[in-house]
Length: 153
Image (cartoon, rainbow, N blue to C red):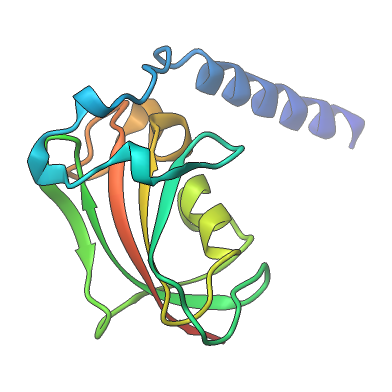
């Protein structure tokens, strides 16, 4: 039993070491965004975790928090403005907060939103898909997201 636990710890440590060995982060600056990305860092707040955010609409409905299931609509763009992912509010993405079913920045930002809220995020790679990328999102990509909290249950 102890040997199995030790093996599991070694695997976990190796995974963490390889994640931290990812390409160094490029600081997020205004000059990295094309006009089509519609990013104005001067109008955004820097979260302590390292992503930028700005409320487009402040929600007035139920607060989202860990353990609840959230339904979100979103658009994800790259800094050049090209769209790489989308979920319409009529067919939202659904997941439980706190179970690592989404990227870290999204998990964090949703915990401070209320239903009806719309927020823009600028997310560095380490709080998005990192060095592995996903689908149309290339490795080490900074993401520009517009997120709408549709429902909380």
